[in-house]
Image (cartoon, rainbow over all chains, first blue to last red):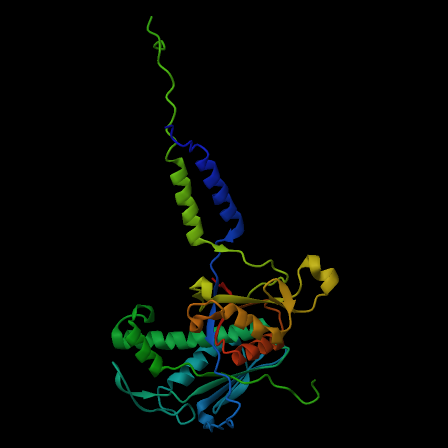
Length: 193
Length: 152
């Protein structure tokens, strides 16, 4: 019984290899991960939640992509480079300043009794013709601010960076600094269709 | 005189190539693991924004892409230069995103894992993105990823 001639197997597998090289791509996709709020319940009337004005920071982008910020202490057009520090100061409210988000006691697993500002809201508003890039940069800075806050807390409480925490520890830090970014519907100004 | 005289009766031994197919198969499997299929032909061109707080997209099978940007140069003559939304292989309206999401969701092992990646040109107007987001929200596709490249 003569053995099967397998000399062409190499050629066949080369063909397969070349096929895969051509049809696939190796680039890894990266991006800024965000989570949308749940859709409003149509049957229920929308519960109007009253948020104290000290708890809200407004971040608005106009049609030229200019950034405007407002909280109880400050309201003006600013450069994006100072957004991160302002958001960090606002969310942290170290001095329990009466014009920045209120602090209250919360019991968190692993962290115990904490004074947190979890009622704060950062409201991002855009116009319909705001450039996407401006919006993306704002989102990026907001996420960066939260990441830095969480990282600082992780180092302080657990002695490790955020990336090296266990799932439970991450959860505790997340409860301490929840991401409350609200994106209202784009503003429609009078006279605009 | 000393010479290099070829000994009589000695023939060139052929290299044993029986393991060659296995070798190639190994390379093939490597490529199958690390790469992903190119799924669509791009009909819009886009330059994604740059960011610093990016995360890698894991679980490729649970990711669906929405492309937003002006038509490619070849299609510009026909389609103009206005912003278009591409789903799968064709242009679509924002409201069609809902069907797209539902179709993509079919056959996913865990529907809650579904991630929508928006690959949008950085000069796109926010109105298009907001429309898409609104539809995504209505269709309960809440995990979103704004595709971007890393800024150094």
